Image (cartoon, rainbow, N blue to C red):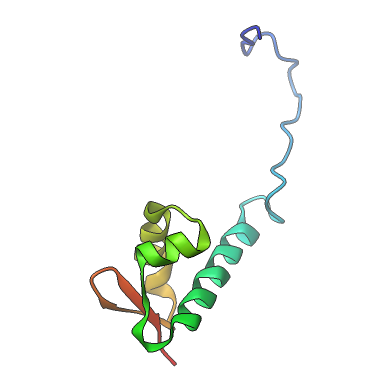
Length: 91
């Protein structure tokens, strides 16, 4: 396959939108991840689950989950950290 440079492209050609999201910023994709994580924690009960257990169950990279818990998870009132790398849902 030949290398295509910027000059070779037709100017103004639109880049196809991603198929994985309903919104241009990816809100639906992130919302789905949140729902999956909350469902997994709800099933775990009071003992909660570790990042590794959640990652294995959902098929998500541990680094993505750690990032989610350190940013979005803090804002979610239902999610609480109960130990090193262990999270659970609070009623």
